[in-house]
Image 1 (cartoon, rainbow, N blue to C red):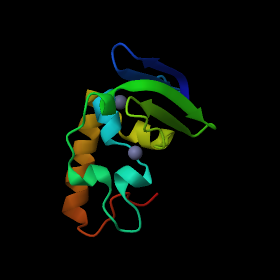
Image 2 (tube, rainbow, N blue to C red):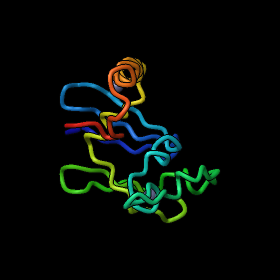
Image 3 (cartoon, helix red, strand yellow):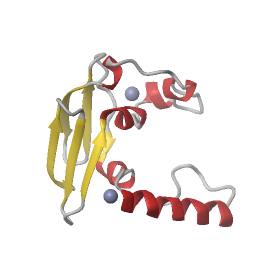
Image 4 (cartoon, rainbow, N blue to C red):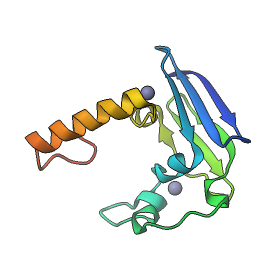
Length: 125
Ligand SMILES: [Zn+2]
Ligand SMILES: [Zn+2]
């Protein structure tokens, strides 16, 4: 769970400070690419809009608002009106773009591909 969430519209960033003190700052464009909604990601094996590799417009990467969904997710609202992507906190923490976490993921990805070629994209909990 985050202890602090701050949307900076001017900078186009979302800052999350986690309960363990870790701080994550997400850029709007990176966040839009992570959108987990059915439209962007696809469902039932169908590719989503983001899977087609669209070039995002300025509106589509402009953060307008940020909504807290219960105590488990964030729902950003974008300049093009898209707001159906619920970003679970666990996913956000998992995708933290800071150098520490990026480095950790690189190591994990390398060992994952070395040990298992059949693991799913989400992995096992
Ligand atoms: Zn979406
Ligand atoms: Zn991090």
